[in-house]
Image (tube, rainbow, N blue to C red; front, side, top):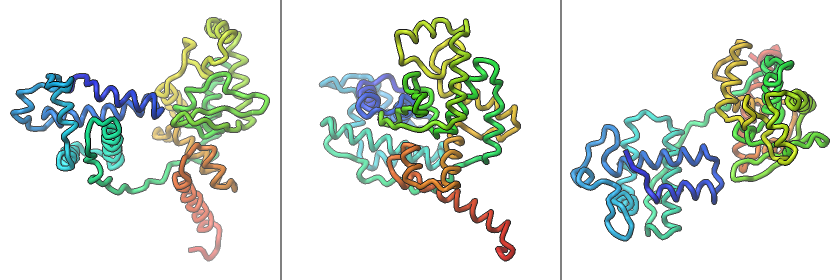
Length: 332
C-alpha cells in the first residue's frame, strides 16, 4: 500500500479548495491516484514488483525533498500511462469508471505542469475511450406520488423524510446539494431555495407548493420537539443551521438520504434500484414532457453544458413514440 504522499495530498487539497470539488469527488480522485501510485511502485494487486521498486520504498527521500514515488510520478511517460490502463483492464471496470480514472490523471498532470513539478504532460498522448451513452432512468408521475406519500407525516422524522422527497422531486437537486441546504437558504415567502452546486456555483430554484408545504410542516414539528432543543437554541444565533437534520440534530449525509429512500421504496414495493438521482432524472423528464424548454431545465438542473441536458429529450421522444404507437390506429 502507498503511504501518505505530500504531492498527492497537495493535489487533493487543490481540488477541494481551489477547484471547489465536492469532498466525495475529491476522495474519488485521491483513490484513483493511490491506485496509480501503487502501480508505479510495483506493489499493485496482481502486479509483478520490479527489483527497483522492491529495493526502494516510495517514502525514501532521494534528495530535494522528493521521494521515489515523486520521481516516478514526474518521469512517467505515455508508455507508463498505457501500462497502467492495461493493468486496469484486469479489474473489469466499467467504461465510465475507467474514463474517470483517466480524467483524474489528466487533471493531476495538468496541475503538475502548472506547478512546474514536471515539464511534459504524458496525458496529451492518451485518448479517453468512447463510452456508450446511457439514457437516464425516470419513473412515472404515479410512482413518484406513491413514493412521496409513504413517510408518516405525523412524526418529526417522518415529516422530514416527506419534505426531503418532495424537495428532491420539486427542485431536481443533487442529493449532495440537498444535504448542504441550510435553513437560511429557504425563502418561504418567495417559495424558492438557494442551491450551492458544483464548483460552488449558486442558483435559485423554485419550490412547488407541495414541497414548501412539506418543509413548513416539518419545521413546525421540529421546533417544539424536545429531542432537538439544542438545535432550536442554535437557530437563535446561527441562521445557517442545516435544513434537514438527523435524529441527533446534525446534518444528514448523502448515505443517510439513500437509506431513507430505500426504506420507502420497500414500503411502496417499488424498484429497489431507484436512487435520489432517479428523482432528479424524473424531475427533468416530467418538465420536458409537459412543455418546459430545454434552456430552463438546464438552469434548474445546474448543468454547465446544454448537451448534458439534451439527453432528457430522448426520454421525452421515446415516451411520445410509445404514446403514438399505442394510440394511433395505423402506427403499427
